[in-house]
Image: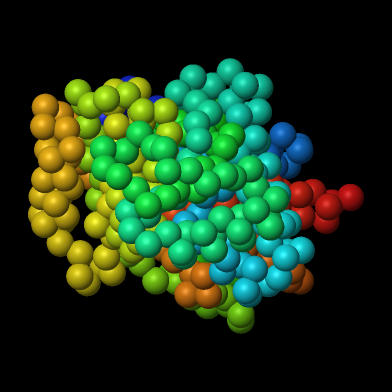
Length: 358
């Protein structure tokens, strides 16, 4: 049991070539996860010659093991942002994140993607002592987000309070990504080993580009000012035979429970711990115990682990390095805020590259 519900429900994957030889292109993107594929797609739409390199196959990493909530609800980030960067920049961050939710919906509609995209409210909740959560509510309101306070939820246990984020969404991430595949030039099973002087070096070939975008978490670079991150692990199970819910839920404590509906039932996730302290059997056993307690007749159809990378500074980031040989952009995974931040990063990078050509 370590295959996600998204991986379970995909048909046979298409075949992708492996890079053999040397190429020249406008943009080389390393990593075919959500950020990399969106970036490559937006650049191709703008007329750029883009080559996408992936060590395994598209969507293999975090994008295949996410809970796939498309939401601006990023735990208690907004109170942290207000303290760190002030009101104007926090409002700007919130606007871009909310635009990202809408961008996913617009892209699904424009391309006619069948990926179970559905609008839904998202809730950040606590079971006891709501003071910290009320601070986050005030911060989210100051940021201009569509939020409200409630104690009414669909959860199988009482809560002290919850912040309701309206106009959010969820979807099937791999069905979404594979709808982008026909638009892209992808080389799979091609591990980028290093980047130097505008060239991406792989085992059996090289790609020379005017712009290079690194979205994979690889030990490729050690750049001045590059932010450091730490990794934590958690697990998720897919449940069938449970009551239908409309909302998505995240508990406001470290390792707290996350719930969201999907086409076959409900996803229950939690048990986040630093990698060295994470025990897969214990975490799965704990989630299964909770599921049987809440819904005695439920059935577990899938279970999987996933990693979350958290910037040590607490802020999501994109690094841009404008060089003589090539421009370099670094956009690592964004963990608990991955879907919307991937869209924001892809828009930002593609716009910056387009501006450089103007």
